[in-house]
Image (cartoon, rainbow, N blue to C red; front, side, top):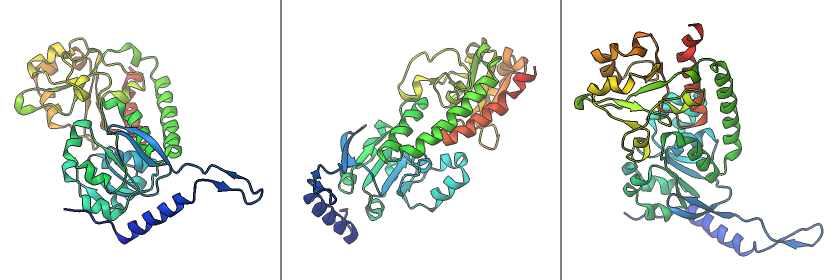
Length: 335
């Protein structure tokens, strides 16, 4: 299916070309002097190469992990993909904007609506999916609409650099840096609060993505979704994966339930992922129902702590995670 440019887009393009023809130099009307005009484009390095993009985009389409990042950064969004997994992590203001914006893609990259993106008339498209998933997107078709930068996740903890790069592409670093500063201050305060207890503990974490049908559980190490924000408060998760599989599989693994004792026998305390409402996911409940769980030293000592909002991938949403970490670890200060 071909994508026809709208009359509005064609007119805008014509005006841009005319303006570019006359912008080789700028004249100072007060002095009569001429000088080089400010550049209107720049080269941006993305997962899909070095891309020429507007210096100050005016109409941005975002998909995947770029959606919450650019919502928080107050980027000039005109279309986004659905991002249901992030809704519990959004502030009321960001959730309102999210719901009002036109959805140009579904939850997966394969659900990209190219016609809807064209109708949004973007001057920049930010694709926030992992590199392997780019194969599900027709980049050439998107590039016929506007410059495309693919900036996708790698390690779970890399959301910090990832979201900054997405905000940079969209010309929205000012708002991004303000939220980051707020997060950093909050994390430092909590790190100071727990300085007498957390650094002394060897922690383990049970993630929410074990597969009950296969009889395994998810163990997350430093740098994973369930652990990385708690690390900013001073938590340390001991051990590492036996075989790195790339991306999140570099920092989490899926042992059989029979290996539960070996996995957490040395843990002074264990955290585990729960839903935003505090409910225990089936994959975690499977672990907690095991007789082996009840025999773990950390469990017998009453040192198991539920963590909410473990899927945070932006600084503003991670502030909710910090609150949840504080709530979970509070008993450590009373024992």
